[in-house]
Length: 255
Ligand code: NDP
Ligand code: 8X3
Image 1 (cartoon, rainbow, N blue to C red):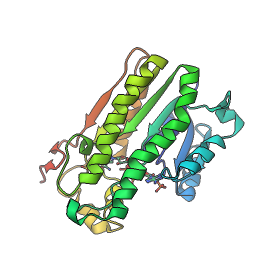
Image 2 (image 1 turned 60 degrees about the vertical axis):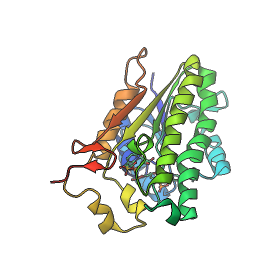
Image 3 (image 1 turned 90 degrees about the vertical axis):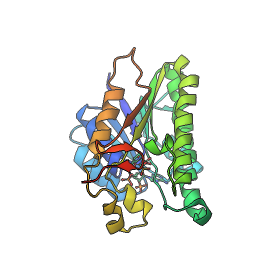
Image 4 (image 1 turned 135 degrees about the vertical axis):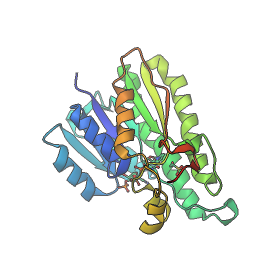
């Protein structure tokens, strides 16, 4: 049976690489993000491989999330629910890197509202259909930052620790309904992540990945594929993936 996957944050980095990997598997794709032009471009790239539909919304906007998912075309719905077999809760970012006493409250809002509330809003729109069908798979993208808090990153780390807790809680509540939950915790992946964290300062962002081979978005997409293609009786519950030069969140051996 062809599976349908909804991926948030599909316009860049890990989400985009996952969309490409899922297209190669023939999964039907619901691609989400705020940048419509990028969603259109990705659809043009993948549409010859698999059916693709897109939803433009900001995960922080609860009403927009609900409206967008409710607006899915009829062949992407079943019995009044969105037809989603695999939900990849990937949308998120860090905003700023500063000590808690110097933190910008607007940055904190972006991280808590996007990385935590947004994940919840999307999950709330998708999970009831999975429960009704008695099957599904949720992949939450947390981070090594959710397991190891580092200096100047308290709020980002807290948002990812929340994702970890939500993955565990979802698994406790949803296993009985035939729904698998996988938590993926990447280390340093070179995407637009640091450009966003440093508010467009590409030079500062590039320095984050200097002197070692960082993970690529494709490396993380590969682990997501591993989790969602595991046999029915296997749940990949929690995976941490680090760059080989990375011993811990902020312990990196640069050449
Ligand atoms: P990118 O910046 O390349 O991609 C982030 C994606 O999230 C974009 O597609 C963006 O889409 C989307 N997004 C961000 N905020 C919102 C929002 N408010 N509403 C809707 N979509 C949003 O970074 P990555 O690919 O690296 O990040 C993906 C996930 O991986 C994040 O959750 C991040 O925390 C996590 N992660 C990243 C690591 C890294 O080192 N790169 C390591 C560990 C975890 P758009 O702007 O179009 O809305
Ligand atoms: C992104 C990885 O270590 O920059 O979550 O927080 S890190």
